Amino acid sequence: VSERSAVQAGAEVLVASNRGPVSYALGEDGALTAKRGGGGLVSGLSAIGPATDAVWVCAALGDGDREAVRQTGGALDPGDTGGQRVRMLDIPAEVHAAAYNGIANSVLWFVHHMLYQTPLEPAFGAEFRAQWASYEAYNRAFAQALADEAAEGAAVLVQDYHLALVPGMLRELRPDVRIAHFSHTPWAPPEYFRMLPDDIAEQLLRGMLGADQLGFLTHRWADAFAGCCAAVVGGTGNTRIAVHGLGADAEFLRERSRRADVDERQATLREQIGTDPDGAPRRTIVRVDRTELSKNIVRGLLAYRQLLVDHPSWRERVVHVAFAYPSRQDLAVYREYTAEVGRVAEEINSEYGTPSWRPVELHVKDDFARSLAAYRLADVALVNPIRDGMNLVAKEIPVVSEQGCVLVLSREAGAHEELGTDALTVNPYDVTGTARALHEALSMDAGERAARTQRLAAAATALPPAQWFLEQLRALKG
Ligand code: G6P
Image 1 (cartoon, rainbow, N blue to C red):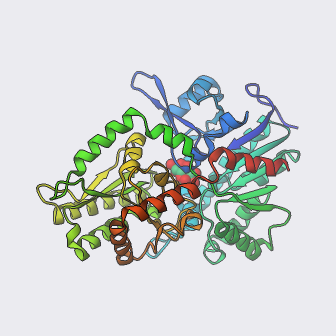
Image 2: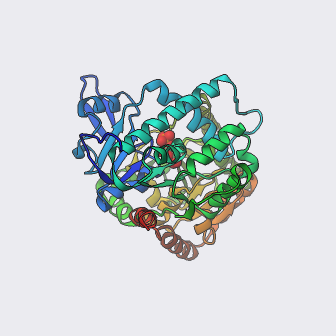
Image 3: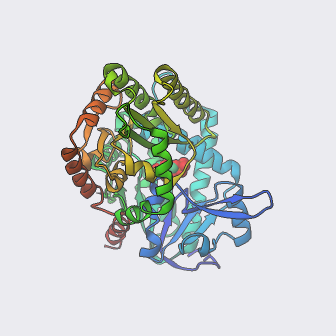
């Protein structure tokens, strides 16, 4: 049907996503160092290597990646990928930037997370149209690579809003393959989705509907998608729609969080957090996020400040440990948000801090071992996104927690569908209500805290990543 790749001919199972399981840093001396990729999607999919013999097709994301593609022809060294077969695509940098920053992470991310609010408005003029052409080209590059790599009748599992057009394009190139698409984000309801120009809305939905099967993290997002299809293209046709709620990987997390580097980080954190006036370790409210508008970090800080105002008895006795790891810094709106997070944390520290107490410990350098250390010692976990496909942090913390940790959880996170009963639910826009929930969480007695944490951990690990992936594959092969 089409030209087969010389490097990895005829894969039976293929996965496609923008970000792959590995990224490369290019040293001054020209040496490459491989590093595990980040984000919920990669955590979910990193289980596929051991579970299947899949080929993972992804994009080169920086100079290091591009150099790795140049050296390997795109078939990465399995030594760098934990044994996973990876084909990395070197899409021209300006095409990738327009598709990834311009369309995927600006327009599509903002639509699905409903982040456009006056005065932050979308623009659909000439620049948007040029970026859209890049988004199409970028999707076509993936569709072509998948067509080249796939064996007759192969199963192809395409991931996320970056690649919404791939199912339709691949269907035309290779009518024989079975195609699934999975959305790791929310899906916008029709009245919001239709903010997109009509032809673009239609093209996106028709692209997705080129798949045999579409997966979403919750019923809410699946229903919203079906609602968009009904409104824009008259229905979902023959495409099956299914919900697969990705869970946390308990086995991996428990093993990883017991290692010495996590112990070390925990000791350092304990020292920074310090002790209260009675000499007991201070209580902690922990959050761990990419610095991202949808994560609502600033309102979380404001809620913490409100807690200190409404309940001065917590002063000197609690620390807000906030890890906010920089993300998508090519976009001005992300850079501004990152700066605002720092500004508000600083304000709280100068307003309420004392020589013996720093109310907010904000850390921005991504460090997985330190995140796990914070999970271990958390008394309260704050997960308050405006809107979130799932939110794996909400699922990971109860698994790793040593103290029994109260989860303060936004009702707008996908995880709320599964964890809502044992979490304290908040409206992410309601700062005062969130402050109230933080107080209730800090005041909860140890027995109830432990019991809730246990139930949360059980619910959070019901569908571990490998099973999540294999379920979809099974359904696709049906
Ligand atoms: C979300 C998306 C993923 C993405 C991750 C990190 O979870 O659903 O596809 O990889 O964010 O974002 P980034 O832009 O850094 O890949």
